[in-house]
Image (cartoon, rainbow, N blue to C red; front, top):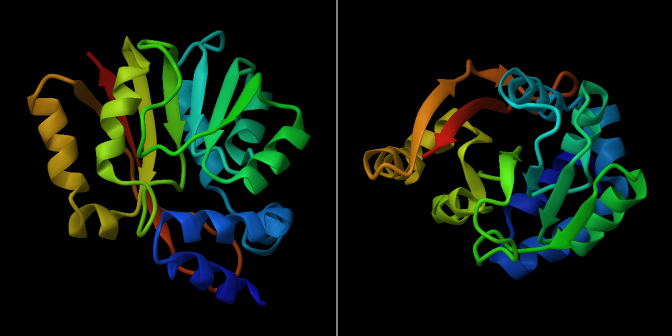
Length: 208
């Protein structure tokens, strides 16, 4: 299966169970495909955003860690207290092999996470909130596990933001006093190579 077909295979998943199975299948080749063939820059861009705001000693949750590319980008910036969760056991297997995370757990972001409230100084989520993946309702739980004053940093495709319920959900959470907007970054192309055209933007919110 060529790379474009793999990406299409992921986005054609009909439900969460099928999506996880497809990521499990892709996991052994995922890093090679994204880094070598596509020049995937989103993890590095997200790590740079986080580094502007978060202390290096902070305990950080990588929500939707996948194969650990975000952790790989955070490590050389001096962040070592990393915890990751992902719904795909195959992706977590690849992340564990990197030896970067303090702990990795299987978890579905659509359900309560097995962490006490205010467990993390920051949450980062790259490439997770998109078509057919994690829903906007997941933010309530991410807010719960973040310390007051801590940050939640995540990427969204601008087109998805406008076409989905994310725009109204983010605004509603702010109006309800759950968090406050710190930054909306500029759009950027998340692939430096190949023909796939996908743009992302990072949002930064501070939990109240």
